[in-house]
Length: 263
Image (cartoon, rainbow, N blue to C red; front, side, top):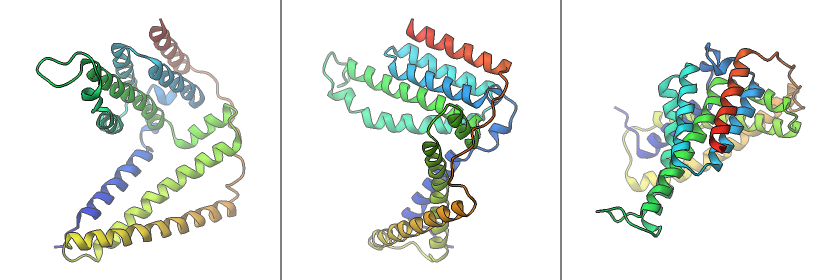
């Protein structure tokens, strides 16, 4: 039975998770609230919600914005597992980064614990704020095809070169992680037994170097293929779409949320 070492398992998990995060093809096709909102309106509304979340300093209000994101996800028929998977990762990383502030910040301490009350409040606020921002951005990406997001950015008169760079970056990220998965499978197919730790570290350096070279080669091939199909030129601006009931309802939700936060 073929065994895999720690490097293979870690790299394969990262690549699979990243592609799962980038690819969202089923949810935008469902019938839901945010799916019916015009991408340009959705993009502006999400930007407004993220902005007020970043500027807010009250924990209860930020927690309420997280609840708004959860309700919007439910109304848009976003799978709970997909939404929770995107919502859990970045806040967990943020919590890991700022957790020492609970001890380092001065002020009164929590009874029975060597933790600062101000530090605990700061960590909770920072983590919840990240969760709210990630929740709103995840709703945008989960309920809108990436090509529609690019069209919305173009319709909002963003520079054509910026839209083209964003499209190429997204395409290359998918290629990057797909190539990583292929190399892991090739490595596993040649592994008979789990190597020693010392050899694992040596093979890891060779693996990463080969992966870097292959990624550069693949990127050049993607660029040449895009040029051959005329895909490096400016993206055409999408035609205007009539404003519907869902657009008006989403605008009302955003305005009410912003007003409650600012008031």
